Length: 450
Image (cartoon, rainbow, N blue to C red; front, side):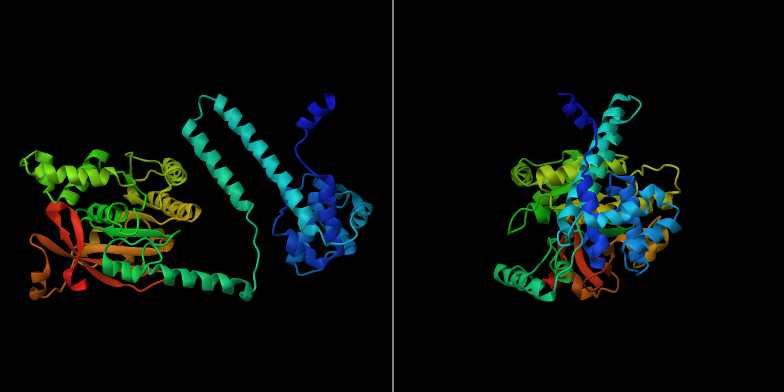
């Protein structure tokens, strides 16, 4: 019983695996290229073993061969030879294993023990913080989630493949795309010319839609979200819509107006005819059955947004997130200047898109200087880092230079608008004309482009 209790107090480690890993590295200079995929110095439980491994890494970074003599010299020069067990201990490591053949196996054992120690450390910290009532529980939860995600990322090992290993997978992908007859590799926004230029919104991408106030940013995002979750002919796409500017009720009323094609002002004022309710009920039924999730939280903090996004991805399997809008997100670092806060938010959203492997579409305002002209990347408000982090940037503005005869193809009460793709990492840029039906707060493709 006493031995079992004592074992529970000792952090997980495997001294033999640590020594076997180091022995393999001293026997074979190429073994480090295998071990480095898994291990860093702090993955070793023994301080002596950690110092020896870091000496091997140092030699590797210098382009020098690691063996008993060079590692001993490196440790002596750093003043750490005695703390590493001395020259005799370094020499003895080569007697632990006959060859470097199993270095991959030994390194994975060392890494597994390291992960278990980190998990114990995280759980102990969570336990302590949970009893401290001065700690915000949301912050504890967010920090814990982030550390666990980081730990999972660190377990992903780098590797390489020959072209002949990748070719079959590439051919299978091309064959599947051909057989599916799907024109888009991403999630289509339901605006044909835009989808043709982007091939749909791609996983892991941060997409920015910028415009001046009252240009229809929210209406455009709602139109795209409805096209994906309600009207997608292939299958409904689960979407999440983070609304930081208007309430969830106001957002749904807009959506009903758009779907029922009843003027939003009439719905808000209650100026309806009995016949309108049939259209409203049918629209409401379509929305009700759609995988459309709304997060309503004014002054949302970045940590809350990340936590909600992860939960929606895990529990509801959402495949795309819309955020209305980016500059209303509150940074966790209030001391930073506002442009640095926005830069932090932008980087975090890009990181979140990659972590969840879904597109994130964030709306953003542009500078007042962009009034009356076609906005460009330098007009994005408050931070130039947004244009750097984004994979796709579009600006919404009133179309310029449109011939009068083309207006005949715009629906009554429609406004011809331009959605200008100013940046796209993996595709063309240029303008796309779309029509804004203001009274229904919805966008439609321009007739000439269909």
